[in-house]
Image (cartoon, rainbow, N blue to C red; front, top):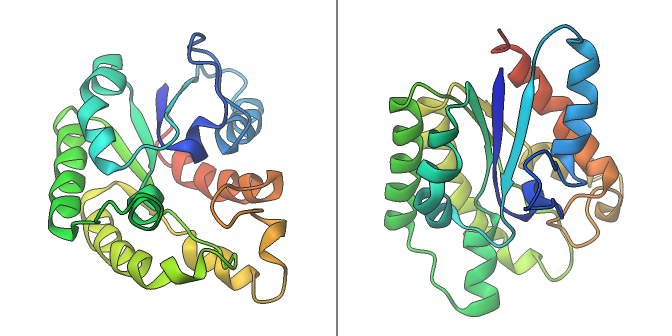
Length: 202
């Protein structure tokens, strides 16, 4: 069973890009450490293809090389937060129609290649400098939810879960900057993602 993890910095997490076996130090590594002991007799190959700073259009540009050509059984995607952040950080407008076209094309290419698609919803925690991004991010999440629930084999929601936890705990427990998860945040991502992945292990 070969699984590729595909996304931005939350997936990348300082992986060594010269080493195909490097999983970084984020949720992918946490998930691997949990998954392999459950299936000690199964040959499970996990590959991290996250690249920090990527948006949906960047995944679309490299999906053939970094995912489809590897012929995995499944791909786990978390993407979208940079589409919102880059509008505020660099003034790069989030074009919702183009965003939707790119997301649909990305998932379509993976499905046509016979790959199981597991989509992990991006999230934004209430850090003071991120609160102004919430309205735009909510509009993006509406598109992600509508498309991914229908097109993907699995859709795992995180934004509501994390923000619900932040009502009774400081957001810094899960992410110091509201975007990149702490170890506790990565552990929560891994625990819920692994349930979706296990449905498709063979």
